[in-house]
Image 1 (tube, rainbow, N blue to C red):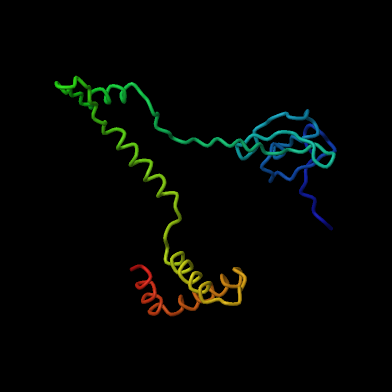
Image 2 (cartoon, helix red, strand yellow):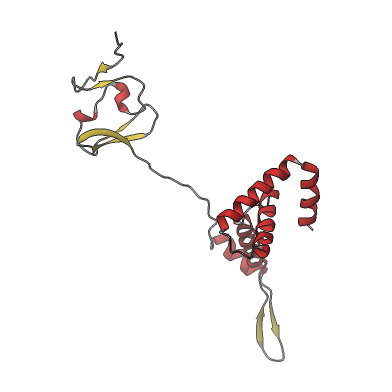
Length: 178
């Protein structure tokens, strides 16, 4: 005899639920009893909406991507005041020209941009250094025009062999990092 753990939904008696769903169906609310695009909060705390799928109404989780990124404003009241204060205006008496010295804020912004660019580069791990070196070595020695996939497989096999011999790996990595 098979146990039936399913209970009938409260709003549509022909639909059943187990009580383990993350959607509003966990509370006994079938999607069949609601209009299309009706939104409710599910057990997981996320918003679920009613949509048609395979000619049936079902609960589908809305993926609301709210990515909050902090960006420093380029121009603010403080930076305007600081640039006026830090700029040194000197007058050349002979030619009556106004010379404006560059502010330190521009230099700081350039440093910040450089650090962001370097952070997005690939992290140089021993594996990455070895793969780059060994692939280049195999490509130079290869006269048969072997496929890159095969060369990469050989590289990973060599890396696996070196991982089993840590002393040999240390010697090779010391040479590569010079």
